Image (cartoon, rainbow, N blue to C red; front, top):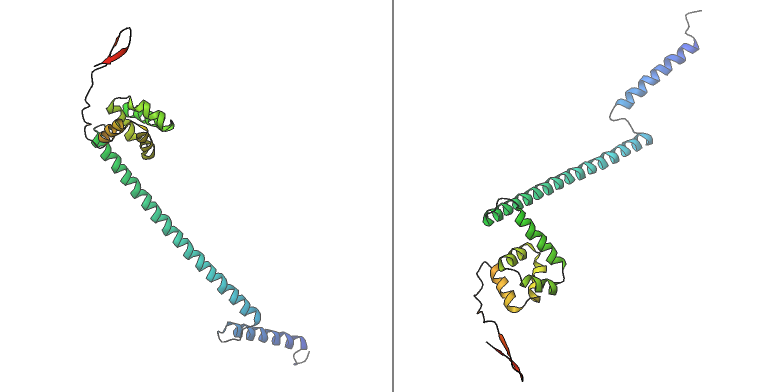
Length: 187
């Protein structure tokens, strides 16, 4: 072979130089973009934007969850404090068996029709009436009070307001005397 390079060697050198030039051009920031490169960049930008939106939404959800958790904890603390105050005011430590009996009675009277519950409740001792009424829902207590006699409802209302009911004027029982013509009641 003579000193002349072969056509195959020249073609290989030209391909290598072309590849290097293309790599240098593609790596430079000023290089003109092809449609494919532009489409890829737009797609990546769109994905970055949607990822940013998702992250922002997740951060907001996390903040809402933390705020809700704090509100629930505060509500539980307030309820616990109210229960502690009620327990201290009642003078009973915790939930006693007697308290459970009054709770059961309250549920029973709430389940009854107000008119029938009023008749039965009015026959109970005032202390029992008061303890049962305190454990009932306000709506049930109101319906039962409405069905009670005015004096019974007033007495229970006064007891619930933590005032002693007025002493009732107790009338002596009526004596019935019979005669042949008429029967009359005398005090």
